[in-house]
Amino acid sequence: MTPASALDSAEQQFERLAAQVKAGHPPSPGETVEVDIDLAASSGFSVELAGEKAQVRYRMAFNQIAEGWSWRPLADPAVDDYYRYKFLPLQSVAVERGEYAHEDKIGVTQQMKVSWRYDYFLAFDNLYDFYPRVVDDDAGFVAELPAAAVGHLGLRARAHLIEPLISESTTFWKATYGKPTDFTLKKRYLVSVLDEIDFVDTDSGKVLCRIRPASNDCLKR
Image (cartoon, rainbow, N blue to C red):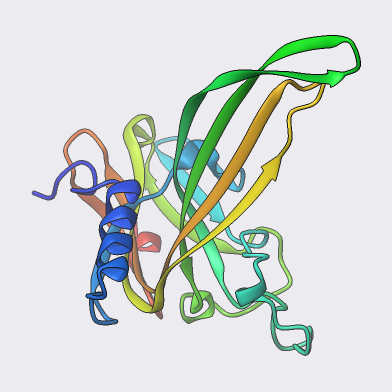
């Protein structure tokens, strides 16, 4: 029986890799990572019940990474995507970092909060190994499962790392009179090739079905 969740969180895995890179001893490309997908942060995830069966769909049409290292401005949209890398959301971690007094509006001193959020993603560049590239907002990972599994259903990804292994971007919003919070958003990516997607029972850890490149046993039920 497999664990009901990945052994290490996305945050723990990213920080371990970042520490290795900083120390000058990064792991070799090809290291396997296993991560739990955050279904609560997945707007394209849906379940349709039909009697004792459930069709579970995880749409990928809009899960494209709009970072500079993913952008291909010369791509022909008829045959390729402008954004090379796709993403799966893994985890968000909010950190409150105190507050300070500041006068944004003349004559009015406010307490400005300092908030940071770390969003973790699995970035991968081989989505179309799993299904043909199509112009379809419903395109993605599909499973037909027993309806009884829906209440404790999870999604897990297994991938292997490729250069540069990890990536990070930072966006900052300065506190104002109307929004008295300094907000820093860090997007952190595990950069990989996707090997499989598993639909899992989060109670028992059992893998209900598995999707691999050109092989989907999630539609044999």
